[in-house]
Image (cartoon, rainbow, N blue to C red; front, side):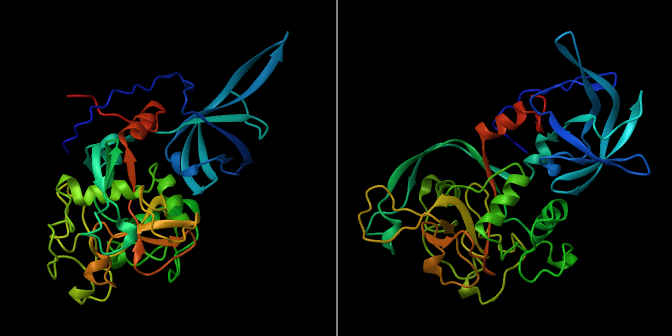
Length: 354
């Protein structure tokens, strides 16, 4: 994948079986020592610790000074739920006790894997919204400049298969209609729906990303050409999974190759609408009398349930944060600055610059 953002090399240093302390180290407590010798650890975010290595130690204080005594090295063998992992003891110099402390170093995610379904969108001054003579709804006005940092946005809506992995690892609540956390294989490529804004936020945090702002979402579709639809300014039937396509249900992501923006982002005009990070509020300069609720968030994009005027890229809807529906899903995003922070924290391993 071509990536205009050059990533520095992150070096992880391990000496003996003592893991070097870094900003990414995670403190854990031993809740139970199981009969097979594995340690049940309580951790703040288990999803970040798959395969993580670490050390078991205790602290001694002598003559007013404290020092850590390492008694063993461990590796996470299984994520049990969002707050617990099982770790196996690799090496030890003394019997482990539940009163001992643990620190873990997450295994960095390779940058290529972290960004494998992401599309790079250059920053700059974007034109968001429409002039009144072009808008169909008051809340789309006025057209105004908005400065955006460079960012990545997911090429597709989050799928049922992706969301299932999140539920399995975190014990997060199931979307309506799910009987368990293992959906049928044939459903995995479909966009996940029936999720609230809070559900979408929880998934995004687990994935080390966030929801896109409504400005990022709109710019990813309209680009500098300020298109009304990903393919141009005129609606074309059967270019996207809208009501006019007469499919009457969501389809696997990228089923309509024509519903693709100039940046390569798919399914913005159809399939399912999408939650964004943004609280619903008027655009700067919009004086139209409308009630705005701070618990309502912007939903963007068309869906298989709506006509084309609601599938235009500037269209804005709003829903309360606990709303869920069969035609609303989401995708994630991350800015270059946020990605750099993950690299500095050792959560994402940068590729060597070639």
